[in-house]
Image 1 (cartoon, helix red, strand yellow):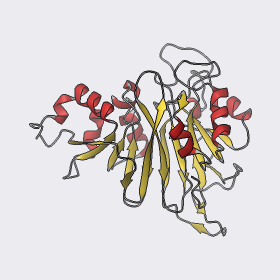
Image 2 (cartoon, rainbow, N blue to C red):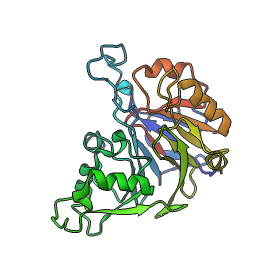
Image 3 (cartoon, rainbow, N blue to C red):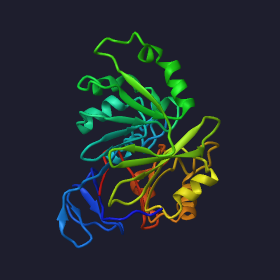
Image 4 (cartoon, rainbow, N blue to C red):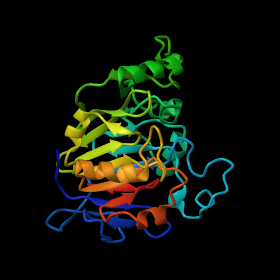
Length: 301
């Protein structure tokens, strides 16, 4: 269901910071949000794109294509992940292989919980980097995931979940099976079942008081009926857009645009992008309400 409130879109590119309003038009060269009345206010809720790339990242090892050799920083894509930040909670979505690089790049010092979309390698193998966020907390770090994903994590990292894991330098995880709605302070995340190959996969419907509703679907080929219902009329959709050609488990560019239209999303950002997508060229062909996300992009609400 649609949410509400004003928001701005800002981030890094090869040019000065960009900021956009809900119509997708440039606003100004700063990081302030605007209320509906036009009065400037500090953002209370932020979504940071830590990574926007496919499973191999961009540039691809050994590739000499135009995108992999591009000097546009928006074409450098680490593995897909986002960070949700409110005054009380910092929530990481997935812990991919680039988590250390992403955290250092963005100056992340705190994570209060992790949400997992699924158990593919490019979304979980940065797990051990989470220990840096356990050093300054006494309670275990909550990991919210489907029972299947939690079992895979426990199989991949058995030492972390061992009852004898008492060394203070190690990660201290608290596995939390998905509930119908996950409450993390004022942030609520509703797990949404998705079709993505053979592995159990979820996206999230994210809500925060006064902010637009956000759908996050980084790895998807099709939607369950229940997810279509939950996402219908979503204010802002972040969705998989792997490449121009069709793929058996990911949305192609055309399929991503079709899903945005199907759900009636007011705005959309494309993520999980392969090296077949050159940022500026791809964005130049998109409808005005659809943009190409990039690493370091921050949405402020």
